[in-house]
Length: 266
Image (tube, rainbow, N blue to C red; front, side, top):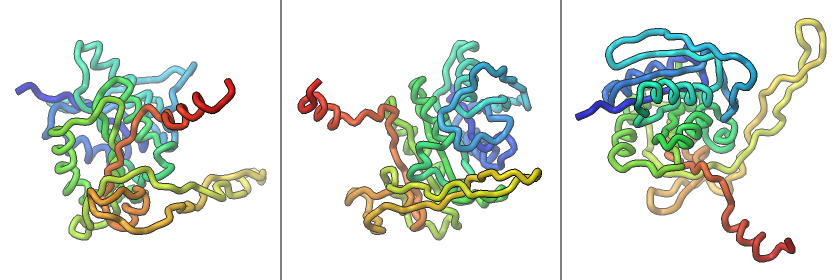
């Protein structure tokens, strides 16, 4: 059987522990190519680097695993990875992004560089999955991902992912035996408020630093069983569940498009 070709990136940079654990995990599923940002690129969404030269560096190469860094964004890394594969006359069979240090639930879906990379994978019709852990600790314990990640990956590989859809999978920050279960979720309802705190820089000039407080807009904290309703990913992760949120690249509101077509005087 021909080996799968797997492309991996992240937004926390090549220095992050999460991407190296993910690369190790994915080697059992095929050949791994890592193209990671040289520097942290969190909250870059699907941003691209324009008019600024980027530099690709080979970090290491061995049988079944090669690692590159790029002085660009996560989406740039996916494009560069596709270039590497296409120059070799082939395409990746799977794109993995992460393991992100910090949850990518709720509105983080909009801002996340981790998920910007998975959206870029969708553009190329490559099945794409983002893994995130609800901890910003550089030395975070990823054992919950090591325990449940393979199960989720094997289900995704066995059943497939529709073109134009990626999976946003978030893991709670807890020991594997404490996880309450796995839930299929939607994007949580919430937003960040009071995001810019005033400070003074080293030269005494007033400036602002982004911090913010998350405002939860969910009406209920109930987490229904699979098949009995769907809840927001943010509340489910905070309640101790692993969440799987399928996200479509096409964000058109078709129902409202019909309303506009039928009711607006155009």
